[in-house]
Length: 344
Image 1 (cartoon, rainbow, N blue to C red):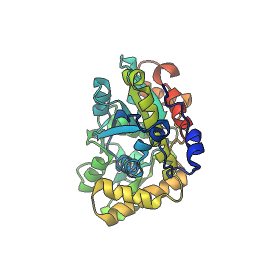
Image 2 (cartoon, rainbow, N blue to C red):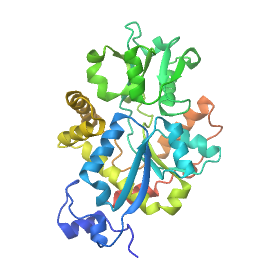
Image 3 (cartoon, helix red, strand yellow):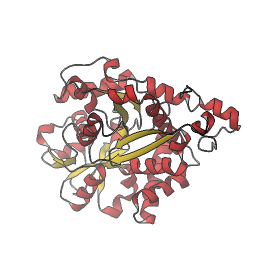
């Protein structure tokens, strides 16, 4: 039986093509047209960047290229995402914070971090009231996040901690996704909150401003914004499919950080969100420029022990994890390495 050990170089030998995104012969084609696509169920959270990447993969046909039949659902926060994975409703998450994974493993959850996604956090803290200028000014204020322990909460708490702010003096409000948080800031129902870079260049339009020390990519570069993880069950039963879906997403990560990807990125955003085309173009272009400048996505997919240990130390500091777990208990990077081999 032929498996996914067929590398992209083998496909290139058959096709004579080398550029990412222009392959005309898929893994399924190379293995034989009778090979059925592998089914995989994906769950992600709901930032605009995730919807854009998902749509780009769809438009480029990268799931089909890697011999997959994939379905994707998006949920409001990491707690719902974890439920989908542990119940078996979904096989893998590709684009989400993974800070809650080590603490869940410590409590008995059969999960593993299997790859990196966006390493730098392309988010900033926004506020509407002009007197809120710095992170320190958030003491005594309401800050929108997701549920306690989920990505937005942990991210915001980590920044407050680094800036010497007593988080007990901040009132956290579970609003939902980063887009939900931004809408709440604009509406004035909360004082501040973290949201994506796609609105960073649109602050005047919305009547808000970013805090002077609230840019996560510069203030908290050690924090890994998004990773990929899956249940032990899915890894054991559907490893080949998980490797291929990681390869499809890695193809997208490499492509969106190339200078010729702007038009496709904007097109994907417009199709994914069905909003005002002018606004979609402006926000997608802003996000694309961030990707060009900072290259935040993990083009080799592998998350280092240093990055995972940092997330565990945060958990311990916040009291949601009791002790450091060994790297191999938390992560299985063999899937990421095998996925990257498919691209070479």
